[in-house]
Each structure stands twice: as structure tokens, then as C-alpha cells.
Image (spheres, rainbow, N blue to C red):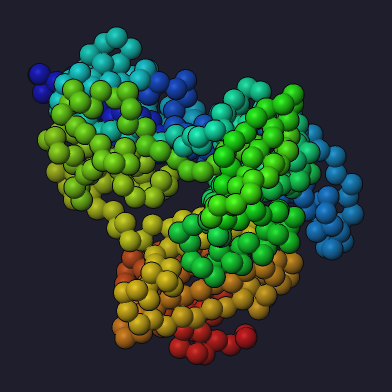
Length: 465
């Protein structure tokens, strides 16, 4: 250890990085984490998962009060939007959680190296002008917004913004255009739609939520349209000009054809994210990236250079905070000589709109490509808790192997789908069959009973439909 400053040095303090650092320290390894932000937690805690959920939650209350949902339950209110206060509670949530990570670093004796790290060799990095050597270096630098050619983002002007800028809008736009029908665009578009904006979503593909089950994509489109979001599918944005305080977009059919223009008060560019691998000096460490800018790793998260590891959004796989967290724990345990494993076939994904949308495992289309399947589906309209809560939209779908009955995938749309999907993920982790779920007693009345009923429907024996 005399030749090294640290056993483990983690680059990046996002969900993967800070978890890796804490777990490494818990395992008795001298650990540091390099982070250039003023606060810990990375994109997720500072400008992503956490602040967006704070705005989603607050806007749900406003929407319920403003559009009659509360009146249906005998609560008559006339809401008044206080946008600065709504932003304030978002900022407070972020401050509390990022401060909590700093406390955990101190508690676990993780050194925070304040600055952005750059490799100077295979076992060394420079942070804020000082070089550090580490026996193991973990790259956990996350991802950033993918730019769209012809559309220049300037968050300060609050006309053409990315996901970070969309969280900071000083007023509710009259018309917001969301470029991209994925998770982030639909979540942030939902926030401002609830607060009074007209929202138009422009998506290059023929349906929203790419990668999700076809039934989910179709029903989600219907639900969002009912809520007031307009969709322009199979359409691409080729240009955006700021004229005064508005933006003028040029739209063209994806398959080619005549262009049209669309005016908006705010444009949200949300077409995906790309790994943060530039500026790390990877060449000095003997590392290269693949065609997508990602760092390739083995199953244990080791790179082609011994002693250098990578996790989270910089490696192949879904860019999800909980995936990065699990990989952070696993890589720390692998470094410590234990066995750290992540089952990448069972990583749930969630869209935190209302209702929420969640899935884990294979879609029906993917499952059918692998062999014969059985499918059970149960509508939330038949679920007693959803009915009493005035939440009839959505369904639960269980996909099982036709021969073994082993569950291959579960997809659902429900007000608490993000919580419900954990049961499905755990069942799949243990190799459950649809019969295992069907014969597991579920508390009544709960939304999760719909999971049981969908599992019963796999073998044609649901009760409440």
C-alpha cells in the first residue's frame, strides 16, 4: 500500500459512484471519490431523478385540485399555483439528499476529492492539480443529454432547454413542445401539462416509449392523449430558431415529405443520453471506447486494463440509477475479493407519470422471438383499490414460458406501478412461475392484487374479469 494513496479511487459521485465508494470503505478499503460538482449525488440527485419526482408529485396535487379529481371525492377546492414555492420544495429535497451522502462519506471515512479527475496513467489520476495513485480505479462518470443537430439548447434563456432547464422554468409556458417520446420527455412534459401548459410531443418513431412492451406503449399513448398531451409521431425536428421569446420548429415526416413549422414558448430536447467518457484521458490509461462511446467491461465490471473498473451509464446497458447502484455494490465487492453479481436480465424500468408505467424482463415481442409463451393480463379497472381511488387506467401483464411457466416479463400501468414492479422483479430473481405468484396471498384491497390476477390469467383462471 506504500506506493498507493488509496486502495480504491472512484471517479464520479452519482448513484453508482457514491455507492461503490461507501461499499468499498465498508469492506475496509481506503477509499476516495473524485467529484467536481459542488454537491454529491451526480445527475440523478441534483438535476434528474430526485428533483423531477419532487415536481411530479407536487404537480399531481395541483392537477387533482384544479381539474376535478378531488371534487369527485367530496373535496371542493380552488387551487392557486405558487410556482416559486413548488420550486423551493424541489430544491429542499435535493439539498437534504445530497447532504445526506456527504454525511455518509464522513461516516464511512470516504475522502471526497473535490474536482474532476483525469487519468495520468494506468493507476493514477489528477484532481484539481494534484496527482493521486490508486490500486483500483472505478469509472462512474454517468451520462449527459444527447444533443440534437439543428437545435441549440440554452437553458439560461428558457426557450430551448434540456431536462435540467425544464426543471428551472420561471413560469408555466403557454405551449411546450417536447422533442422525444421517451421517459424523461413524458415525465417533464406531464409536469408542465398539469400546471397548465399545452404540451405537444414530437417523436421520430411510430410510437412512444421505445423498448417497452407494445401493449404498454399503445395504452400509454391513449392515456396521455386523454390527459391532453398531443402527439406527432413519425416526425423529426430538423431545425429550431428562437424568435424573440418563442421558438419556431421545422418538422418533417420521418419517411420524407413536406415540412411544417410549429411555434412554442418552450422546447424541451429529450432524445436520450450519452456516456460521459470524454475528457477522462482514457488514452493515458490504455483504454478506448466502443462505437457508442461506452467502456466495455467483463461480467465483474473490470475493463481491459487490470485495476480499472467501470459501472453505470458509461458501460453498455440501460442508463438507470438503480442499475448503477447495484453495479456499485458489486464492483466494490469484486475489488475486495468477494463475489459481486448483477442480474442484468432483471432490471426494472419505471416512468413516473400518472399513472406510472413499469416493466421488468422481456416484452411479449422479445419473449416470442425466443419461444412459445403464455400471457395473462388484468385491467386495473377490475382492481378494487384502483376503483375506490378513482384510478381505473392501466393493466398488469405477465408473460411466462409456455412449457416451464417461468415468468419472463411483467409490465404494468397503474398509479403505483413503480412500487408494484418490485414484487415481479423479486419473483423473477428467484425463478418464479406464474403459478407461484398466483398462489401467493396478496393483501386486500391493494393495487398489487392485480399482479396476482394477471398471474392467474396466464392459466385462464382470473377471478375478477
